[in-house]
Length: 622
Image (cartoon, rainbow, N blue to C red):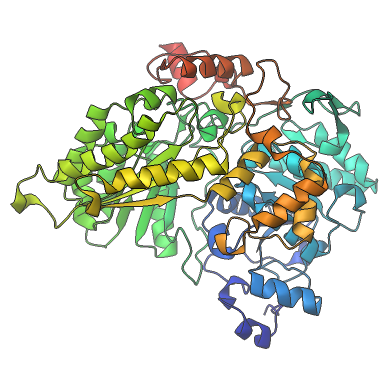
């Protein structure tokens, strides 16, 4: 029987002790002494967030398929336990074995969101692992980062030994085999990093050096050892139906953010929205086989006991066999109370028949993302939605029995005018009006529109990576302007308006396009007490301001300036397939309000065809 790392006294004194005891349904148990490699997978946020992440579930299952590897998990301790662990000198531990993270061979940290960067340092600190990679010895794990934020790893480069650029199913086993070979040689730490750097998709930051112009922009980014590549190639899983996917995902004992089975129906997106980093990073689109999905859905629902399944992708409506999959799920689980959640749907492609059948199981709200209120701005961002299709989709949804709709928009998009912001309120009201075009006997009570806006953050590897970002003062002004416009609409009582915190968005914008000069800033902010920056109750903007000031780092340099066409970006050493030339051409088309067809309609020559899979191959054959 496992001995818990925390005493009963401590567990009873903290919020939600189930966060720290492990033992969840479908947890994998191995004898740590009987494996060659111990890998601790970390999500640097609270347990409820981390347990909802599909990527960790996939890698956890994949790594544990090998008898010589034991993959365990760790999440950021909440602030109450963090305090106790520091006061009592308790080292951070993995959930499965309850043993210290410092004893592992690898600590793999998923990088999903820039505002978790100080939590990375929290995890390292509580584990007793030196915060900077240069100070680690053979007694310390190798710290590896992966996920969307790894596509610009430079703001946190000093804290990682290596980064995995791309999708985890491809070369992780090759990396593990290299580690076993290195271990047998008894060589030094640098020797393993040189071996790892020769594996496609692996980036070792200490083997590269940044040089700067006087104006602070990047002059050169050079490798310093012969074993490293000039550019790191993104790794892509080509066949999504002949790969790793858990049949028995972990089931927590407490409610988590995504408390349901998650079925990834495809990876990538055909749409080419110019603000969307994921849409560019995960090109080309690769659908999973229908029979594969049916089998996994059945296995996961059976092994977890969940009563809800989410069909996950960047744009679910673009999965060609979506109706067949939904009909099968309804028929197969009819009468068993299983709800089917369909996020990431495009209003123009959502079939009324499918909606009605899902509605029969259990009512829930529908979420749509027009992203911009005016047609002009939707063309600028290449959203590919007309007002007519939005209103028709809403009408179809209301006809299908829904009366609650969540709408997502962005403020601060490049080229935005005041009338574009007002259009968000107007469109919200128009959607509410569509509901009242139904005969009274067909309505399901009053309509409920929840309109949410986030502050647009330019991200690497998007056409808007050259664009300036609005200041938090401008964001606040636009927020209050929109609130007034919402209040002036005819159906104002049916519209609830929510807005994302501008202070947090500002920092997110700095980290998203930052460089290595931010490592010292992040370290100081952490040492001054910053953790859980994504949580408003723990976020301290003043501590961040002080850290930037103390290191003479100008926040506006990263936020407010438009980049030159030929500027060298900190992430340009990474090859994601999509070319910089294509992205800049799309930036110019955005300025002119020109749209670009989706990948199935016409190939725009983005560069992703080099991977020879997905829609690019379909288009080539056509």
